[in-house]
Image 1 (cartoon, rainbow over the protein chains, first blue to last red):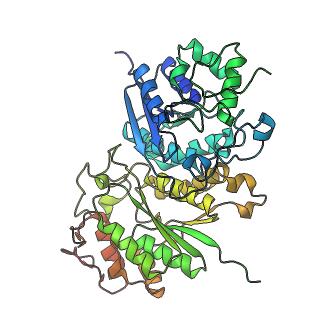
Image 2 (image 1 turned 90 degrees about the vertical axis):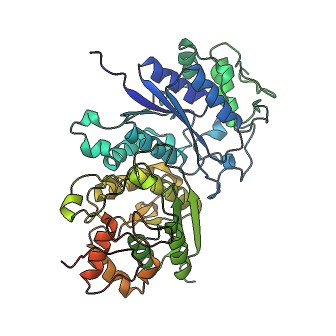
Length: 241
Length: 241
């Protein structure tokens, strides 16, 4: 009898990184269950992008979880502060940006853990990146490692699993990659990046601003592969200069 | 200048344990910020009990966070399975009960972490108990320790804090106590336990069933202090026999 296809949960925002992560999970043979959060962020276009990606990759299931992080305030992405524009990569580096949402990845992974326990699934994929987003504490490898350890004490997976390999594994395939390397891998996997939304401040129609940190990094990732980003922009920074 | 009163977040369900935990945090001199979750549980009366408790103890702030755990299914407390009744404590011991909500405390603590980061607060209180509820993986001290370690890597608190004491501490004052000891401590702190709701299956008016695991343990806690539980019951098991 063939071994059943292992289930994996993939956190999917509809952006470049999470879409690439989903394609990687599929390519590695996982039965993908995608999870997207509507968390009071300004851009509903993210949710639509996530739906397109989930459909395109024919995931087994896709849940959109409603959570309200606005009750706590404290982040540009939840509407309290302005998104910074036109910053150089030096300006982005080394400090926690205002676009950081307090404990966001911790909350997202906790919902993924709940779903993993119910399915059950022993694998969770998250598209964190420790290179470009070094200012986000919850993208660091040491955070992911500590989360995985906690998760294996939190649930049935850890209590009832007799062997270490029965526990939960958090996969971060993009963690050590540059944006250019992520784009290259995704193109090899057949991703149509025109379907993804990365911008922190898109127009209601989904056009990217071209100037926020996320746009600057994304445009450079494509430029370093010698190509234009196929996504829609209101204007573009000049990543090649 | 007097030192400012330190802020603490207290997870408050409106039950016996979390109410006692809140009273302890107040007694220890914290400026209490209470956090309650509406998570698709059957019993709205829990939320009302939490509001009464928060008002009675004059907390600084009380947020009720809407979260939907039903999307995942898999627990009696979220409506999928029947609440077991009339079990002995031997029957409760050693297995994860169906009233276990997947990853619940992990999710609750993640929201508390987000709020702690925004306030900021360096202290979170949760009324987990490792004695009576040994079947819940996310009530164990090793889980709490792993969560605290993860939390201190997840947030600004861990990145920007220069000293260990600047990080987040998760307090579990009830962890090693019996239900009788918890009741005794709470009575000393002036808690009116008629205002609290513990039952897994209360009537719409808030009367406890008297037969679920939570009722059995609670009734015994009062009986061992030689008194009746002042809460309203539809019927009572006979804890003294």
